[in-house]
Length: 97
Image (cartoon, rainbow, N blue to C red; front, top):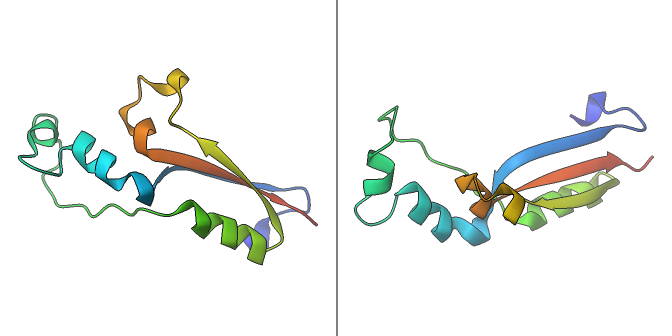
């Protein structure tokens, strides 16, 4: 990413699973308890491990690479139709050079 980032460039990383909201995600996705919610809508029965990141991971990345950092909280009323917004965020990283 950084090799091709222009001097006025922006990196957007969306729909990141928030480690601090992992329990919410597991409940909503049906991965805890009986898993009824997940089973009722599963398309692929393979076991997929989901990655969860703390916000600090991206903050440190931005600092270490001289990028500005903006957190976009997806847990807002405007996105209430999207179940995943309850446990996800996005980040915007801008080149500071």
